[in-house]
Length: 326
Image 1 (cartoon, rainbow, N blue to C red):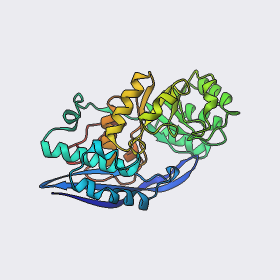
Image 2: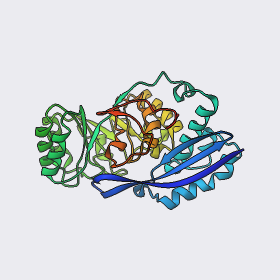
Image 3: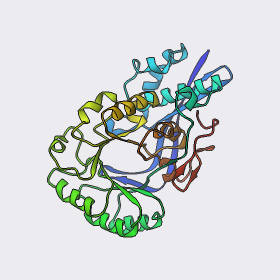
Image 4: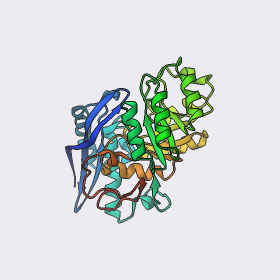
């Protein structure tokens, strides 16, 4: 017989993580564990206030699915029980982990994927003063790809300083909905001049129709504007890429379908993450096998990760050990 347990865990962030909407100093996650016989599977979800979630609401959602889970419900039927979000992500990933361990098959084999290969992840430069961001970029200038958080002032000065500090790194700019249509052309020109590879979610979700007609010499990626497979067709012509996060899709099951839909529409795929531990990053790593861009550096932003965790060699992420996940 199955047994579901729920836990709230906290991981301190190394310093402060800041984006255009605010700052935080710890990652608070909800872990679902589904046990059956001698084996158990785990999944981690990150409640995200911007999407109307809290720790209590995510715990309540997981609890609402207890009977479904303990009566043997599977990850496909789970999508009819819970909406996309952190709660469903935790349960979906726990069910995948449980099945992998119960059958003795690695997660790649279980999901019909090729053997897992190491992935190169972007490394995030948090929003801060020009000087602080330049210093952070200089200390990370040996990393092949930097993801730079910019804010509501556009951020040209910050971007110039970061490019000087890290001249060889590829740069992804992430505005987290902080720009306006009026500042978009100027920031696009700055991104062209400074060799930026991609711009992520420059305008607010729901107010991004400006992009339908805007010139996009640098690829523009949807994040807050894209949650599930149903969003993909709406993005075509407005965006060039999509950032797929398991806490938005509601798990790896939906994420893999969303990746397939994005590929079919010719969109560039990025797999991203919230600031969270290696338990959340392990299934994101699986999804990132099919992505052109990976942003799964969550554990690198923590002062303390869970043990065992993912192994990083610089920004190279290695496949998870089964005792972590999968």
